[in-house]
Amino acid sequence: MSNVFYRSSKPYPVAVRGEGVYLFDREGRRYLDGSSGALVANIGHGRAEVADAMAQQARTLAFVHGSQFSSEVLEEYAARLLVFLGLPEYRLWAVSGGSEANESAIKLARQYHVERGEAGRFKIITRVPSYHGASLGALAASGMGARRALYAPLMNESAWPKMPKPDPRLSGEADAERLRTVLEEAGPETVAAFIAEPVVGASDAALAPGDGYHARIAEICREYGVLFVADEVMSGMGRCGSPLAVRLGGDVTPDLVVLGKGLAAGYAPLAGVAASPEVYGTVMNGSGAFKHGFTYAGHPVSVAAGLSVLDIVEREALPSCAAQQGKILLAGLQALQERHPAVLEARGQGMLLGLVLGNPQTGEAAAAPGLAERVAAAARTHGLLTYPGSGALDGTRGDHLLLGPPLSITDRELDEMLGALDQALTDTA
Image: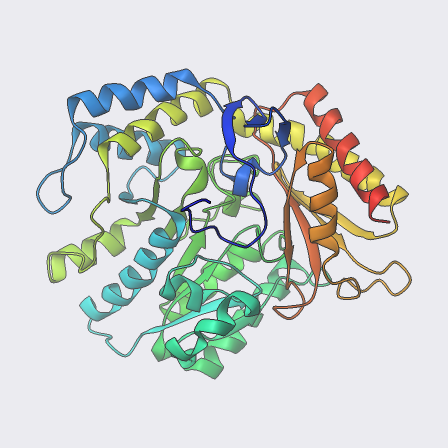
């Protein structure tokens, strides 16, 4: 009997080793990590230099509390990371995971407006579907019905107005204008921020708006005095072919950028919020402190992992690799769409890609509930790990499969991945 509290009642193999794009379990089976876990392992598994950097930091300084000290490694990491992201004047609030980072961004947006004398601003506009994390505030911001339903009594739903997801039938600018309608309905004087994933991840696989969308969103937010928060937990750090996915369609600079997953690429828990000089200055010149915190925020060993990962990302030009290999993978997925009627759409940016699954006769993604889970289970039997999901249509219905291997994946490994997925789709036809 195991004493582990598992996430579900399904059986779990025990992983024992990772190397490159592969994971190995205790029974000797090998899996191609086609989803980088939950799109985390951006640099691949088993990088010894990251482990060495963590060990060296642990021997030197393993922990300080953020209310008492900074650390040399945190100072260096913040400076280098923000230059890499093209946000050199911003400040980094480092935490342990994407949920913590989004929770921090929500609280920071609220405090910013209070410090400005606009305490009536407390609402956070988000989209349906969307996913921003599992902590209560981040979950309240999320537009995923199935994950929110159980905890709905704990949320003040009026504080979280929802905007429709990007509509590919509209131009980017027209699509973004729908934010204005939601702002006017919510009462713009009550809204603190708008938060969105530049490329949607778990809730609607790899859905991206048209060019000009984020630039217009930023303009509308400025017009109404609302902060624009880009949730780049999944899409950032080069996964979509650029350090920040929000800039793929133009030169856009959000007020807050939320980061995670690829920061330390799974080698340690690390996430963060990059805050503009205006937001940071307003808070520090007001009460003089951000009224929020976590025990392990800015943990030196995690930050050392992040610094080593950043070395690899820059040295190996992994954002460019993601753009190049992503085109190859997307072309392969589109070829699978031609052969498998249940694949209604293949889409994505860089190495954040997805398949929309459903009924080929009606074109409805809602017509085959559980299909994504069945395809993922079949893929696992062929040695491929994927990220199944549902709820893109109304929070419950709409199956899809998210794909995002390590950015370092080779052409041969891409062929292996597509072959296994082809077999899985055939098995579940």
